[in-house]
Length: 478
Image 1 (tube, rainbow, N blue to C red):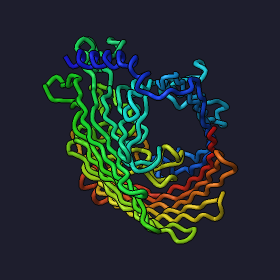
Image 2: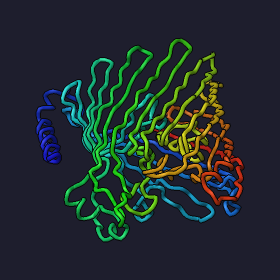
Image 3: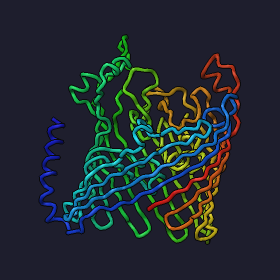
Image 4: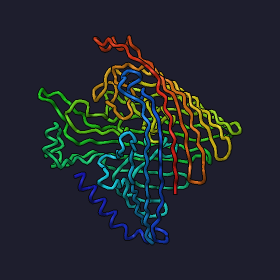
């Protein structure tokens, strides 16, 4: 019945396009092309990843990657528009192999290294209401894209509204999070998956719906928040003894945020929550629907909470800020959040070594100092310290989700704390062209006594060597 209602709504919306021409202002039809490109070169010493001096076989890494993205926007005379984005040869160069390795799943040199990650249509019914339909990417938060704590650059397919009244923007949405279709039923069955005949016949998809609201309450202050719910209709999985092996990834998610300033004082912050079934749902994790051990990387046993606050003060060309935050009961922030070097910030930092919130409940404090040396040159320094109450276990029924994307250490390492010091130098060559130089040092610490207590029989002492890394990033926009 839900499918019938959704299909009916889509047909009514499509039928309403004819009236849109009268509602929207006349515009000049045509196609606009914009884009961006990025090249990164980076070095990480031999303690990178999950090593920290515990594996002599791992050496240092010196590498390079690149990408180009093109945005096409076609607009009709009535204001209806279509947008798509092409990603071109997003790859990592490997001089020691004399080869290239494409980072995008399923993209190889044989395909030409070109694919599309957005394709949607926008229908402006009135000056206050636009409906977008298709595959798009959403960012709801206090900061620009690629920096937010909760909902940043999330890939979605469905419907979303853009409703604007004065200083208020409302975004209702209904989206497919997972289309439960598996064309290779035999391979699915061999892997112990139930995305086969039953899920395909019943069309057991995963849906996400909710609303985001943002209001400019003052010329310098913005308040916002979102609330949503995810429904997972896929069949649960059980072993031969009737013990549940897969629990559906469904539940409530939401956040509230603020961004503003008063004279020289500024404030940014966000508080977020995810139901137990959704902890780590914004972590770019591959989450196969399978009985295979360790495949379910989304969800843990408790509702997760997280938040941060960043008060800062401007003194002439110097900005001093304090980043204080926490994660609890399995909550994992978006991978975009962090210091931009070694702590989180996977979207901007290829040398990131720690995923914020991983391995346990976190409480951190960070000093951030930025100095505008001149108009085209800016230096930012970071010092972060995190205290971590390590999880006893990971996975759907453990303390935290079974993460893999930029996970810092295996759960039985019992990470106790970590600190990092880093810096970023930004040089603007010209409008739309920036070079970033970044470097940092990360030092973990493990609780050996707690490790032996929680994992009897584990006797090997762990090294906790620090990690040094540096990177150069060139970005252009056109």
